[in-house]
Length: 156
Picture 1 (tube, rainbow, N blue to C red):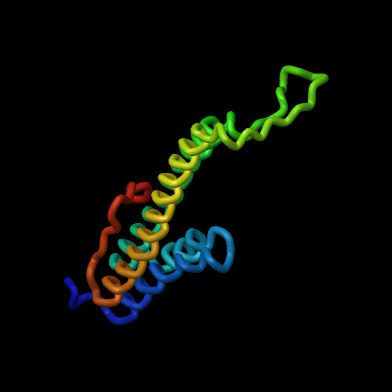
Picture 2 (cartoon, rainbow, N blue to C red; picture 1 turned 60 degrees about the vertical axis):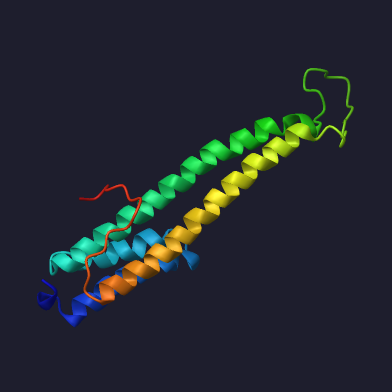
């Protein structure tokens, strides 16, 4: 099947993968530019159609994983570190005493552990995104049908 894929299709599929890096220049560039390239060329080539779907499914999956990580990590961090922060008592309206007792930081360390785990997972998603995008672009250039790992197929 590789013989039916011409150089233009390989270059276009490679550019569809590489276009996801446009997110570093303008918001949602990792969705907009690949979507435009895919929609405008999907009927001309099954090869470009396959790679365009893979790119969009992977970017949507990474966004979903990042949102889920934030939904879990931020509340857990806030509620485990609440005692250390030492807010003024909300229920005592006439008392404005701030208690910043730094010796009682045990619960805060638990919050830091959750934040550290979330940070490592977030960094892992970032590295996975960069690595898989570069790998997919190289495979597309070589005429290989590539499937991203950990991808939910939203577009079939």
